[in-house]
Length: 422
Image (tube, rainbow, N blue to C red; front, side, top):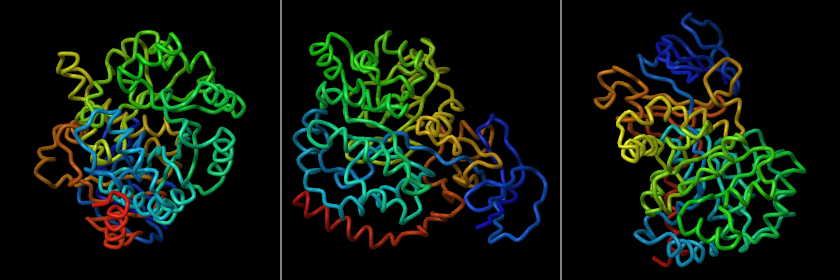
């Protein structure tokens, strides 16, 4: 499909400048960005009437199918929530459930201008099919732990899903130190070295997690992973709330990605990640994730951006901390880099056509003093007019174009009742 968007404002995220002009696509790629009128045989030409095009947001840590537990097990401490509610109910998930709840989560991503997810979950055949059937881009993160999976299985997944479909890729990963025995961690480190691959995991989400690791190994999770050789080819951690100076130095020296999940960390009372302090220690690679709907409870990048900025200002006692454009970088190109989606990071000719159209003709976007600040501090999902992935329009003006929304809602509620007993 060839699309032409004209009369547009374009924030490429290569810098803070706004281009007034056109963006054209050819197949899954961006073919032109600039101020000159483009002529050609387009499948559709769309007058944006001054509205904004941005790179799609990248949800750099999530568990999409956990939509099945949205608002089911709230107001509990993390360990009670995880071990008494999440794990027992996840054990009941079927292939059909994973498919339906993944599509439900993807629909929510689209309403928030999110064009790709970094997803850690299981029953991957159904998960991958749910994404390709509706045209959603995802990066699968390995999720092995002591409750399921093998290192051999992770290696098979790595080779399968990195050769499955252009919309699907795979990064090595595991659930967390506290759920994964040392023998498995050692084998995973060797796997990362074999494939020269990054490694990702939940890392230092709670103080109890870090204290437990220090009790077991006399070091923090980050230091343990580094000692095992997991990060020789990059990677990173999700949450990273309870980092000490040595943890920050390891992330800095190895060029690792810190993926913050502010809404989930607030709701589970895990803490506030020290992003500004991390930057003072030389860390440069940051991204933002929603986490799953069981702990958040919504998959909304606008909320995450506001919290990422606002919480740092409070933590630092400095209203100038964590400026808006830097947060927008984390939510777009930072996430893309963390996920290995280097052709989806910014808007430029030759990059993948993954983008969102933001409706500026709404009260919360006016007046337009600074678009980046409007997006981070005032923006909401109501401003997402269109979401495009790989040059295809998947969501437009409140309608989903590649999935039957009513059918998904019907199936999701039926399966949720069967699993949760409501």
